Length: 325
Image (tube, rainbow, N blue to C red; front, side, top):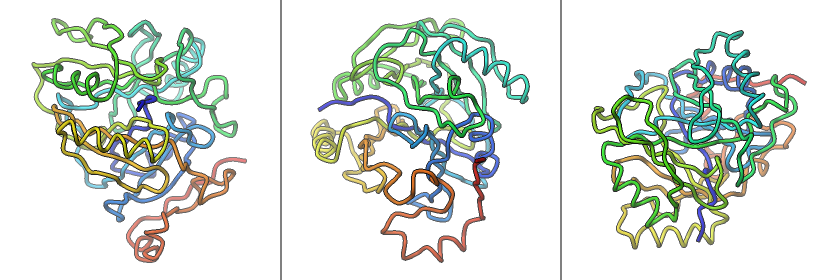
């Protein structure tokens, strides 16, 4: 049994159209699937990624139109990293953000890598992280039809930051149950706070890391638009997922059991600080119901929702996506 790294991360938006514009036109990600939230089919679930949405590159959003702004705090996924090839790419992005009016900080080192912190239009806290000196799980391949040069494009998800009041129980789940190993630590950005611990799994590298930030001084997060719903971790296939379901159950963690998501299969559970974790299979992937050249251009529904297509389409606003040729 082996957790290979980060599979995807799912966040909240109040406006699918604006979200689509930012992540495709500004960030240069590909919309690899336009579908609905399978637990609430009245709202969109958008998947962005590399050229075909490879595992480890997927940033997804549930649209909650009336969601209030996220109130940051503890028991949260407080930082989402996006990988780029090298330090030169960070210089490109800093200039691009200046040109396009995207709020950002300066380029600084975090956990031994050059990073650039920024926010999306709804305040989600993101970091671009350079893979200049990275070793471990490789990134994906940026889409060559994106409005960002391939050599500077986002190659996937990097370290995910969790902020908790008491890190020990979360660290225990990561190491004792999920097989992560401690890699080191680095200084907290908030004055007077404990160091941020780094954990990695599988082959290691930025695509496998969880950064655990102790913040006993913070209130609990109130999740809303610009917040993150859950983080998912990669396993090879359904057979291995079934082993994880048994393993997590044997460890005494309440969980969802097997969940069919069509594009992958999943298990959900909450770690002791209340953050939602998912374990998801690498396949089947996003090309089973759409041609790879036209991913995301029409509303895709898994077979078990297809009979309700007319009802679903009547509830959601049209969302056009026509990438440039």
